[in-house]
Image 1 (cartoon, one colour):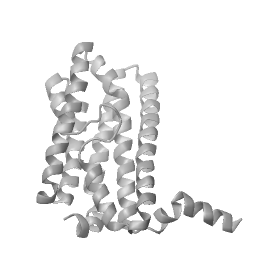
Image 2 (image 1 turned 90 degrees about the horizontal axis):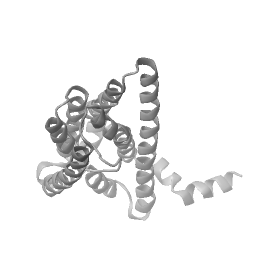
Image 3 (image 1 turned 60 degrees about the vertical axis):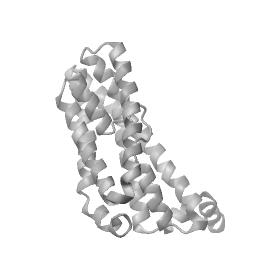
Image 4 (image 1 turned 135 degrees about the horizontal axis):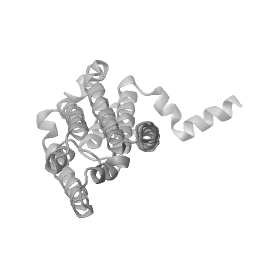
Length: 218
């Protein structure tokens, strides 16, 4: 049984992730947390805009411009990452997450929300956006031996998928509970964006993450 379990762990890549260094595990955890935030905010984004009385056509414009803006921002940041430094890019991303979450939690202005959505990388689809995955993957490639990279990237992707799914599930549950208690959908949606902002603050303020990754992404 022990031999079978060991073989399964090796073939599934579980051994690779368990034996990886602290830095690699930290990057996988950061991806999970980030995609948790994306999954949670994506689920309530359209209902939130609708609760503000924004017409459907404008909501469609919002989603389109957000997606295009995110692509444009990603291209720019990816192009200058090595010049600025990977650690600074990742740190800036967490600050932008926190800022955009607070704008959504406090503002009713369509254009302010649109700007925050683009600059603060609010995901219109729940999927990975921004330059952060590219930066993290380049670091993972440095941290992981060539023979084990496919396993590491597979688990890195799995962490992201799990984060999105669990974030959406948690978001739906929180909104339902708050709506049943208070009868205010808009306030319930804003709580999700406060959580989104809090996740950005936690990611930015994690001294352990900054110290562990300094050698690789300064």
